Length: 330
Picture 1 (cartoon, helix red, strand yellow):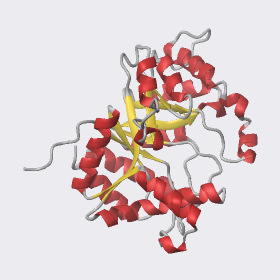
Picture 2 (tube, rainbow, N blue to C red; picture 1 turned 90 degrees about the vertical axis):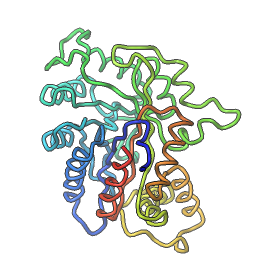
Picture 3 (tube, rainbow, N blue to C red; picture 1 turned 180 degrees about the horizontal axis):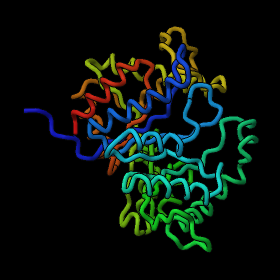
């Protein structure tokens, strides 16, 4: 008798990580191929992200990539995780989402974030800084009026509130999502440590402040977590290490590089070793049995409604096998 299925649906967020030694176009092709596979395997959603001028990430234009993904898949929901609203006019974002929804009815999600560009030069190029990020809640409210058809002008094509909207919760994002009655995406330490003694967890703040809406009559939480499954725990850990090292580089050197074969721990500085360890502590990896147990523990402790699998691997075949193994759990 096999393991029971995971108690919640599972989705994927692919950031279009570049790999050292391969052209950036390969990263985008890999996203398309992974989405096709995820569609066949039965994942609920496949989301892509927005990063600008980041050396190791080819995904800069989620709306464009979403159009290609929706055209190449049949039933999986396609979305953004997310569009960074401070970088755009709310009307344009609404029009892009509504256009995709009109072309692929019932399959488009709109995840929105308020993160700024990685460096001052990128923020200057985007004409977006702290002032724009501080207006996120007002921008979000304006965008919703265009999607709902309640704005002073009628955005076309008309969406009529069909597109689900989620907020990527960074900082005050949980309260903003709650007040707007939207789904929330939460990950990292805020998710894993949300029950720490003496702290009011982000999820509790979201649920307690939630105002029901036509889109979400009750709170809806996507728990974003790095996941890797393999034949052995060490094999799964190896899949996560290249991105963990790239994240450590971004925090110590200011550059997020293309993924490469992971260095040995002995080659890392003390600070980088600590950062890699932190990434692994907020990841779930191991054999199928280990991953199943750890994910169910996470769902139980967080009350998440859905899991959003994140993380990119340098080993393309290992990534495909991890997706396949995880799909066997649902």
